[in-house]
Amino acid sequence: MPDLAYWLELHAARLQQGLRGDAAYPLPPLAFSPEERALFQLAERVAEVLRPVEPRPLWVASLYERLVGEADRQRCLAVPSPLHSRWWLGVILGTAAVGVWAYRRLHTTRR
Amino acid sequence: MSTRHPPAGSHEDERRLVERARRDPEAFGELYLRYVRSIYNYIFYRTGDPEEAEDLTSRVFLQALQHLPRFQERGLPFAAWLFRIAHNLVANWHRDRQRHPTVPLSENGHNRGPERVEAALERREERERLLEAIRRLPPDRQQLLILKFVEGLSNAEIARIMGRTEGAIRVLYHRTLEALRKELTREYSG
Image (cartoon, rainbow over all chains, first blue to last red; front, side, top):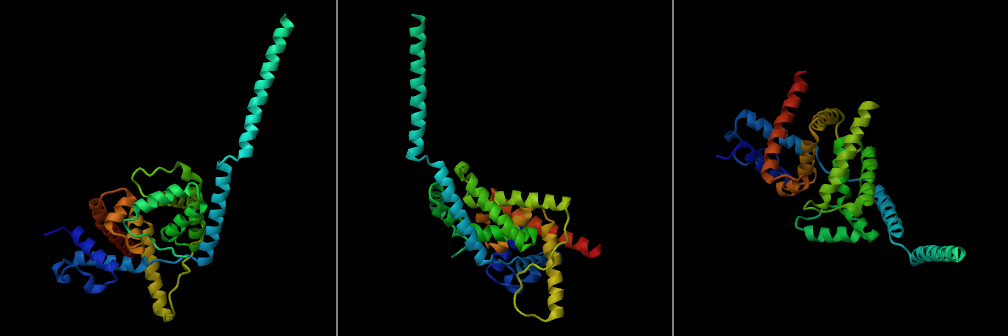
């Protein structure tokens, strides 16, 4: 005979289908002890109170707009623009040019 | 705007969607619509407050968006990652509330239809007592009950989200009911 966890699982599946009372039992209720039946009844009460609630559609929609806007903003920050890349190229070339100029100047002075 | 939980077997589709969401804001929006209801429900039942549920759900998705470039699947579905963020935020929320206690709201804001006043009050008290007892369970047990009854997921799906085996989920369900019964018995006798 399977253990009680197995029967409770079958019972839960029937509760999920909307069955209630004796109809939700996997075997006739009298096949179970009073303590076991108390657990089946408790499971049914839990299924009754834990029903899906719908969030407010207006809130869902406004959060959607906010998240998509935020995602768009993050994407813009993450992807470097061509202008951004050119700026860095300018900084690197400028630094190199200054370095070469300083090197030459130093050598000219020493001669 | 549909916010139903995705059907089982959409793992590959989801992996591609997560990949796309790293570059495409609309794809992240799609992921959001897929999971907003599940995360909202999870937080709503963990906190018992619709306003807090909205606030914390927003934070879950903002954090997910912020950390998406670092998200690596490693066999866990995207939903598991979201639930983990939600779990941490709810844990912090409970910690803050213990430090700064407030008066709990008994009305959850999700009433269903007209009922006779007395019977409705009695039923609501009963319901609140049970919900409070559920909220006193350890977080993994609360998550199991919410995924099973609010989301209507199978043990296999719950096991994937919680990172356990199906057998472990079955045993955990049995133990959760036992613990809940003890909790309620203690409450009625005390």
